[in-house]
Image (cartoon, rainbow, N blue to C red; front, side):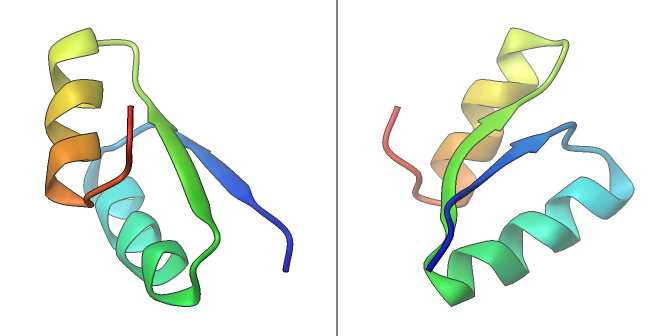
Length: 48
């Protein structure tokens, strides 16, 4: 399985993150706002 890093955690980013996480492919989430990135990583249970 390929691994995915998601850039942007807006409206669609949160939905894509959930789907990639369910597939076991999500490795990192990045956003221009570091607080958003940290929150997204916690919400999706992605190790930092």
